[in-house]
Image (cartoon, rainbow, N blue to C red; front, side, top):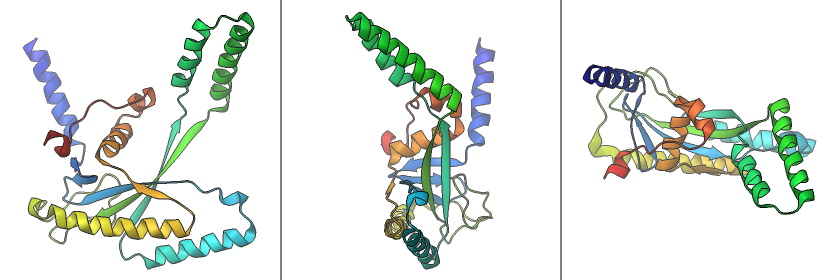
Length: 224
């Protein structure tokens, strides 16, 4: 038994080495390479339904927004198969307490219709994110952006004493991006610590994420 527990612990430790995240604190992702990330969730924009004049205006605003940036950002789109089980469970619960036979038949048929439709159409939900990176001058990474997961660095380790300074830099960059996207008709808000943990957990565990919810993960902020 002790051997099995030891083997499982070793496997868990090896898996954790593949995760480049050091910790999540105050809405900031600190990676093992010493760089930091803030992630914004952005609204969608139905560009095709806009008039030609509106489309040209959006393109121009977006071009001006990108040209105004003096730092790198990354756009990330998460596609996930729509999970309708919670909704179906609500309908099944209603079906159990319904006294009208006619309504029971209608609810039952509706459950079958929704389930078959989603399965046949393969409906997916899309969520849009903007990743803002800050790389302290004391470290050197192999990528200007690094994306969600970062890259190996060849410089000094993360300077804990300057975290607030780094956070201010990220906050300023976030404001620039939020304002720039707003001019294009896109709303964006930064994810907090809990939302970031859930997002990254879903990226590393897509099967579990589809079932709904992430386990209780402790960040530095929650531990303190």
